[in-house]
Length: 163
Length: 466
Image 1: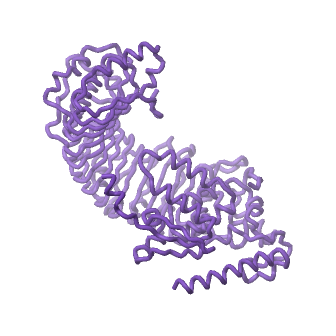
Image 2: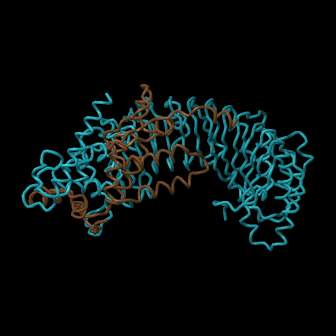
Image 3: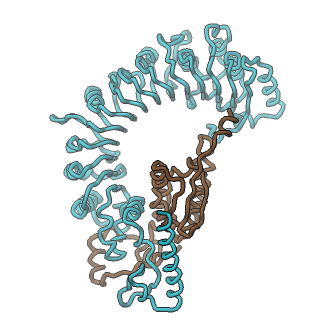
């Protein structure tokens, strides 16, 4: 049984990052991305990814490999992997979420968005602006008006930390 | 195509190179047409706004992961963010909305205000809506109009958890949500509106603490032709029997009085979980419950009759009048089987009727005095008509090493010719002195095994119950 699966040639794909690095992965791993799956279905084995940089692609391939081997028994292991995966800077998270969005990997995308949301949660608007360098283009009067209209959302204590 | 791409990427690289170069040496306005927008006067930041630059669909997902009030607060970030949250297709409202320190308004009034504000500002479809006001103590706000609003905005997935304390009538506007695919209701009473045609697209229905007549429940289920999942939890059904007619049903999860259930027309049903209480032998009739479950593969059972004193000589049926040939996995992890001969006899009756069983998960812990009745029940000679020809794995939780437990192990080992593994949870055993444990292990190792392959593994399960 084992020998037949070994002799069967595994189909491989080459992914090319925006910085022209090439990565060879198994087709079964790659097709977890809808974008790659569509290309594979059209007969491509070489997949250029002009929107995904090497740094993010390496992490994403890691993620895909791990999740391709999902079984009933390694649930805990995958959970730990996921936890480590999202334990990174905001910059990395945004890079990854853009890549996951482009590649259409919905489970990764949801996990990253949930992580970003969890980190923004309870923060004051001022803190969120500072963390993400959002330029507030409201006049003080406009801002006061919006606060008043949604008063209940702005009551209470917020987290002012910037991490 | 490849060549073109390569050239394009080179150009991009070049641009990026300049970008890096320029940001260090030149004022930022040089790049204003590239990816930095010229900040308005008085702005402090020269770094890119990474959050706002994400694609809209990504921002939507992030906002949907936030509690509603946090999403609303993003409207203050900048003009671009003003109405972002208003076009979310999935919204979730709960108690955090009115739990504030400066609580001057009556929560119900406050809640109503928030709902109507949302209703005025929201644009586009709302496909999923969750309203959890189960902790609201004051009277339930009027949500009838609000649900009507949802019904005209393509609602497909609706979760309504109404206040626990006073039972509320379900708004009749719910029955106008004809596009519903998932419906989850808690704490309300339901009555049939005059013109209800059914939920033609509904695939999952969950009713928890919902008072509903058997007749209405039966009719509701039969008017959902695509229903695949049905969860009924503590819905007061009393002794009335309901017959479930759901040709597409695949999963059924029931907590309540099991004897009131009859799975009538369920040709595709593969997973069933039944949890019940106050079981009376004269009512509980598994033959009726499983009458047409020919496709059943997974059965999870939890029933108890702790308050019921069964007469000593009570004998349950030996097996069902029919075999269920597709049942592969049988779980009884919460029943102290060896505590009452009544429960044990029912479990054995079912096991005998599952000739293709592959996996069995049971709890063997018992606090009761050794019961001759139970030991008698487990004597090998009562099983001359049975072999577990397909049983490959058995999991026994909460093993303490008492005679009925080892007797059950002996029985399973002797009757399972293809058994691969028997996992025995030893959490309770670990408190015993070493020599007692060794004696028990030694005893188990002498039992004859019908399967030469079978191994007995002792382990401390992660979820071994207390």
